[in-house]
Length: 140
Image (cartoon, rainbow, N blue to C red; front, side, top):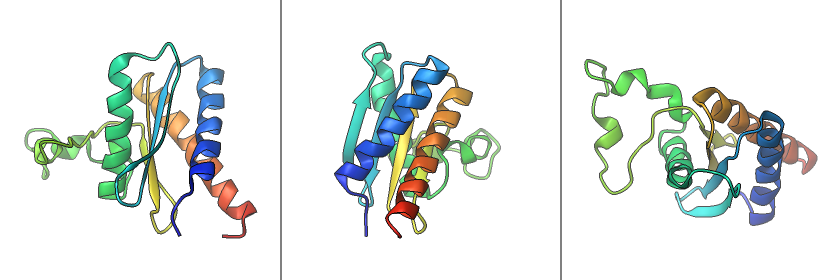
């Protein structure tokens, strides 16, 4: 089964909490198993560009079934996947930290943008932890 809207909103709340702890005005996007935007939240002070970055980080993590930053070095000139991040055109793959798949098997993905790569990575990890805890509580 995929992720529900109430589950998506609950795990975004966990991300908002972690972002507040780090004092990072962030944007959060959750895409479902089909890559469609299911839930989105943006801190009122988040930069405009962070909105699209969060969505694209989530889409990247879903598409590649790995954290968005996992292929960063591999898509650079000389890397084995050079150019992959620009190959799809209309929906760019974002290969820096902040996107993570949700579930095993993958049922959705989160994208976080607003801080440093370390901030976005930490906040997205908190969202994954919240999703895993929610699944454990639901007996999944």
